Image (tube, rainbow, N blue to C red; front, side, top):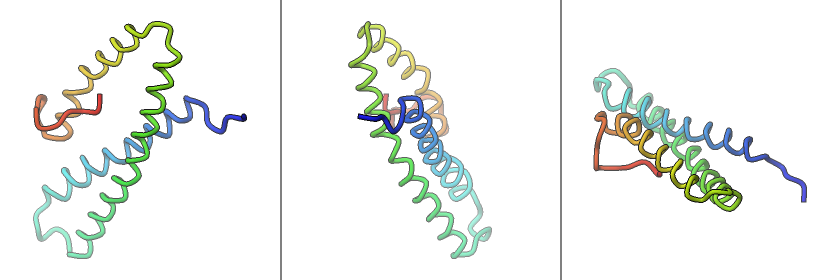
Length: 116
């Protein structure tokens, strides 16, 4: 069976779609839409911005199954399961404050955690 995408190509695609989703949520929604004065946008412009946020969110949903697939592939093909899990844990600890800051505005929040 011929491979269509390599693991690296899948990672790049997943990262791209994840960045699109996060840009829509953090920049468009939390940064522009929720912080702009009401008189800054017409109803049509506001509706268009919300539509863009929804499109970014829909595109971003593509990244989770790709990352799950790559996570399982990595687990299956690793030579050291303990080291693999340790590295995932370290990445989770490093990425959590960044995720909390982008999502809630504080470095630590128990309201939501990142996927790791």
